[in-house]
Length: 94
Image 1: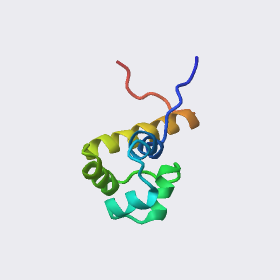
Image 2: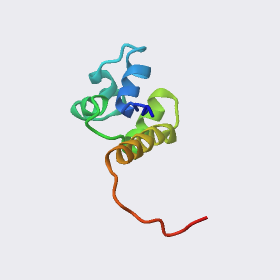
Image 3: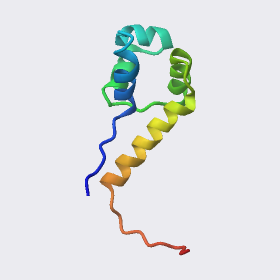
Image 4: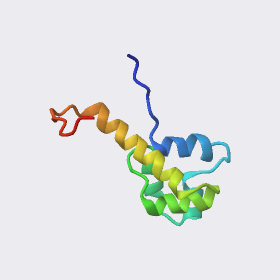
């Protein structure tokens, strides 16, 4: 079975929003009032999107904060499922 590769939300931000608008890290950081190094870490997949950043991105790109939080949550769950295989017993059966 082939496993679907997920993009980090920062990569999605870069590819779908920053590149088409020719936005630099510096310009985005200034726009959303966040520090440049944090934005750089985000688009390079080294930082997660927080609720505060999701809210700021939603205003800057006319999306919803929930959109950004869903991207992060989906990515986090994918990474967890991909990397962890603990032996946990099912407590409830249907």
